[in-house]
Length: 216
Image (cartoon, rainbow, N blue to C red; front, top):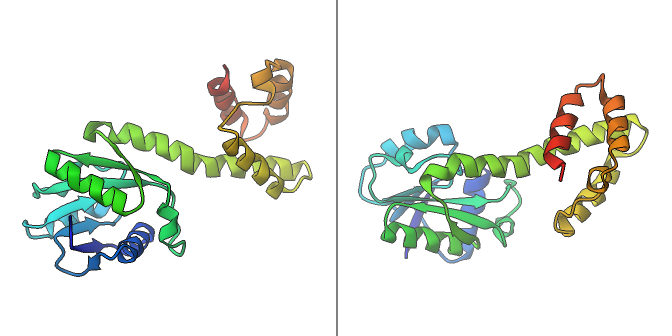
């Protein structure tokens, strides 16, 4: 659908996406029929305004609305729902999902084509639901890091190796996020003991909030 694509941005997303497009035989150059913005969210509007109208313009942000691509009418977005490392290679995209946002059938078709070319499972993402969607994605990815750091700190204080938590977390994911532990069993006396030992720590409110959200 596009013979040549201009990837703008050489961070984690731009590097990974460019590598995948090359792998799929797409030509990358400075005058592509699609200008794909892989820049920080705060820079999208400025970069979009610097592009002379004519080619298609798209971004790969999860939270940024299409209005940031003004003045371009030929526009859409594809958000790879994946965490990326700059040196991880294009295989990081394999099996991930991708949110496609567009304002016309033609734009939607081009967005779906790009998502599939990148190796993503595409789904349609409404422009006015992007913030809600991105909040969920951030909880799943960013806050997982926070939870690991908190849990690692606690088990390390108890004399256990933090890396011992990794197989536990991986198995939880492999088991389809089936809930186990004291809250699933209704063992509130154990939960109260947790609260007691955490009472004077920086994690007390976090534990209470998570326990309430976890309650069946």
